[in-house]
Image (cartoon, rainbow, N blue to C red):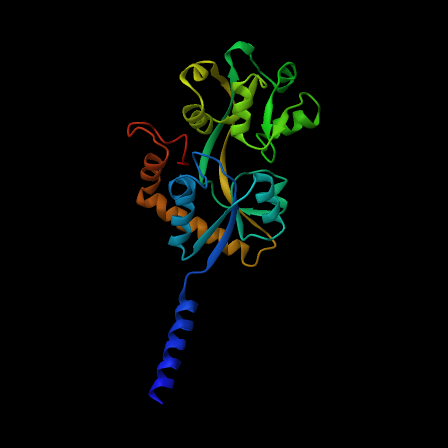
Length: 262
């Protein structure tokens, strides 16, 4: 009798413990170093912010790294509870709810010194070999210019491939987040190769990146609200600057306002 009672109690506490465990959300994302990536410590600064924000709201997170276009499509089809680090686009809001901005990013053109690259509007780009990453929408104006055949970017699968093509002269210019581009130049280019690459003074866009949840997901608005609440708690605790300094290799004196929202 005592043995059966012991088995019953063990089973009860196992079930009760499972019921009390934090719910787990599956989130799709792409590799985008130095912000987030499978091979980064703790999967990068943005992953740490995501996990700590949701932990504040009582959730565990399971990140799945996919090509960006697939990460978006799988989330839109309801195969993931959320997707992460997306710019706000009007056409996306038809299908998704958006969190408050998580990080801000500045997109610029990195270009070869010997290309004499310059631009004031998208029509100027037609004379150059320009790259772009599949699944990225650099700006509304970029999309309209491509649709209007003002220029024809060579679309590839990742920022790193784009910079490799820039390195060997297959591209004249390549658009990227400023910090992402600097990270690739530091890690993949020699000193001489870095000397051959310049950053154009004109910004393509500056925008926030968000967590998005498909409107078809049960309790989608609750997930967004819980994330926003947990994220705001991090902000009040002053965690953002500490995380950015730790994971982005920024100098302590460097202003992090170009990485994190105010």
